[in-house]
Length: 597
Figure (cartoon, rainbow, N blue to C red):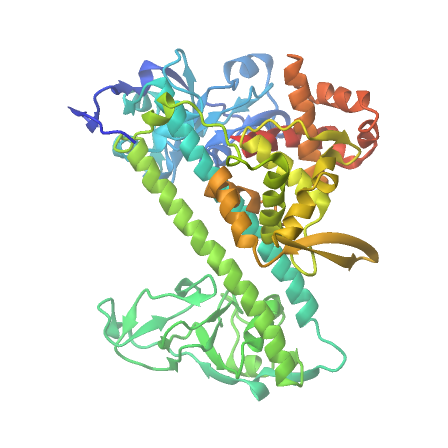
């Protein structure tokens, strides 16, 4: 960071060496293609409104829509690398002018009439910077403030051309884009991890909550204390905190927790902290936990049960309420239907508690990750406002030479690898699923590529990049002697294998790792915790092939990568496996760009 002198402009203070430009000084705008409904669903790729709205960038892999077009339409509405697409119309002003930059040449693609195309005619804007620069607060305020609104909000090329934007020099644009892209990668890795954790929990619920032979079938009213809601008169509603929070229905439930929207000073039916809350009107059966004492409106009921088993079980059975709902206008259930709802549960409270604890621990882990994701998104929002206005600058990083990441003096390659094994055993290893040599080798290879290290120790092996010195050159022995790892044997699906778990001195290894590679690298490797071995092998192998092609100054294509594999006796058989299909190799190329950005 450096101290900056600022100048006053029409859009506020910006650094003295930045410019204020109009978008139209660099982009020419065109409206998109409008066609009748029967032309859609086949033909050429078409970039639609949601493609732009949901993504800061567009690639071939993201475009799923199809439309039939003639030759003139194909030429007139084409989409090229570097184009910036903007949402043109929507129901609210906040949803127009949302931008997405095209990072691929989209062959034969066109763009929708709900979208505007901005085509650059000079090199004032870095392509990656375009992912972010049109989303800054000052720019968004102008776009929203200049839209028209009748039945829908609308913008056009003339309006967007006149929007003023603060523009740093190209090197600083690239530095800003890199910083924000790194944050995006972190956010994406958290989102993927949360999705995986949710899938794991779904599998656990299926396994744990499917009735066993010794479980009892009972009606809900026999085991739970049910309290049907009753709405107070609206004259007692308030937002001043008088009385208790009012829980009326699904609008007052978020992420399985009650939230506060309104209060009521007239308490008709009371729910207590920790009660199970269930919606009794459409959608019927949505389950939450009361996070505070509350007043129950007619759209919900509460249940008391001695442990959290019933809470998890009712989530598992949420879809079953559709079989018992009644109502001509909208679905609902009454007290009799709820009380007579059949459930299955273990007769032993200790077994109920065991199941509830497992699932509650999973919930807690997911919630912690969601909080981390929320903070990451807040951090990115704050970074954008600071970086896109020049209040925080990254110019120092442009002038300073890039520091090679090397082990501390006296630490040879074997000790470096011992530290990596210890750190990865801490991140990936458990008694049931210890860190395998396969996973360590592939992730360590990708890490070294991420940190732009050159390591000649990796050889082309049938399973991808392989480093025999790690096992036979002393790194594993060092890690064991230093008490960074313990070697354990385990059985998975009838197959015995040996792996690593963290030992008592692993914190020392982690400290070395963070000193050498940085704390960001520790977060970076966490994204591979639940990754399939096939994917790790694919990515590492394709990357090694790409590096070979770069050394020969050859084009990087699916065909050239396959040729590298075909020419190597260790690798040629990979092409017989489905994981090395053309589409998977193409996906790997894109994935590697994301990993190493």
